[in-house]
Image (cartoon, rainbow, N blue to C red):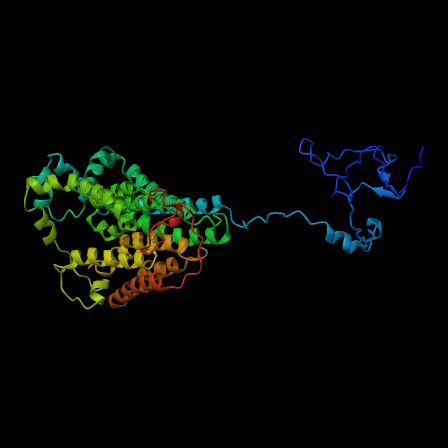
Length: 492
C-alpha cells in the first residue's frame, strides 16, 4: 500500500464546507440544483468552533472578514450631584409656573352702573316738578289720529294729520306709541317719564354691550372703562333726562333708542335688523336719516337687504298718509321755525329769520357724506356722532335735548375709538353744549361754542391718529371700505 502524498488532494475527504462569504481558492462551485443563497445566520454558542483546517493544517475561518474599527473615546461627563449645586443654580434649573396676572379692577362694573342709575333717578325726581313741556304735541296728535279733536283743532285728522298740522314734526310710530301710552299720560304722567328714563339706561347698556363685542381687549371693570362710563355716561344722562322728563320729547327718545339698537345690529352682523331699527327710528323722527350711512357698513350683497327692510318699514308707516293726502310731504317741508342767534346755523353766517328751505335736506346730506368719509377711513364708530353733529350744526334752534344724541355718539367713540377708553370728546361736549348754557349768556358766543364744539369733535374723530386696536372676530367691518373684519366673514 503506497504512502499517502500530503501534497495531493484527498478525494475521499469530506466535501468542503462553503462559507457565507466569497468562495475560497480551489473550492468547487455549487451546482444548479443546490441552493446558492447564503445560509440564515442563527445565534450559536460562543464555544462552537466556526473554523476548519485546510490541507496545510492552517486554520481558515468561515466568518466574513470585518475591518477593525477603532472606537472613539469620548470624554466622560460626570454629573454633578444635586446637593452640590449652589442655591442660585438650583433655582434656575426649575422653571417657575406661570401665573396669570389679573387685570386692574380698582373700580368694579357694578359701581359705575350704580352711579349712572342714581344720577338718572335723582334727575328724574328733580325735573319732574317742571316736566312735560312739549308733551301736549304728542297728546294732541294721538287724539287727532283716532278721530278726536282737541280744543282749537277743527281740521280733519286721521290720515290727513300731517297735511293739516305740519307743526307735528314727528313720525307715525311716535303717534302710535303715544296712543298706547295715553291711558297713563292723563293720570300717570309719572309712569310715562319713568318709561323714557328706563329707555336711557337701556341705551347705555347697548353701548356697553357694543364695547364688549367690538373690543374684547378692554376690561369692562378697569379704571379707564369705569371713568369713561361715569363721565361720558353722566354727560349723556344729564341731556337725556332733560329730553325725557323736562321736555317730554318721546320722538327723540324713540329715535335714539332705535338708533342704538341699529348700531348693536351692525355689530352683530345683522343687516335686516339694522334696517328694521333704522326704519323705526325714521318713523319716530325723520331726522334719523342722518345716520343712514350705518347700513353702508355691510358688503354690497348684504347692503340691499338692509336697504330693502328700511324702505319697507318707512313706506308702511308714511305711505298711507301720502296716498290719503298729496299735500303731506309739501306741508311737512314748508314748516319752519325761527333761526335764533344762539344757533350754530346763525354762527355759520345764515342770518335768515326762519329755517332755510334747503336746511332739512342739507342736514341729511351732510350727515350721510360725513358717515361715508368715516367708513372710508375705517372709523365706522364715528358715523352716529357725525350724523347727529351735522343736525346740530345746521339746525336753527338750540334746544338742549338735541345734545343727548351727540353725547351718546361721542360716548361710543370714547369707549372704542382709542386703544383704551378715554372720555375726551364727552368732556368737550359737556363743556361746550351743556355747561356753557348756564355760564354764558351771550347768544353770539353760545352759537360759536355750539358750532366749534361740533366741528372740533368731528375733525378729531376723522383725523385723530389711532394705535393698533385688537378687534374681535365678531366685530364690525374692517376692510377697505370700513367693513366687518375678514377674520370672520361668515357669509363670504
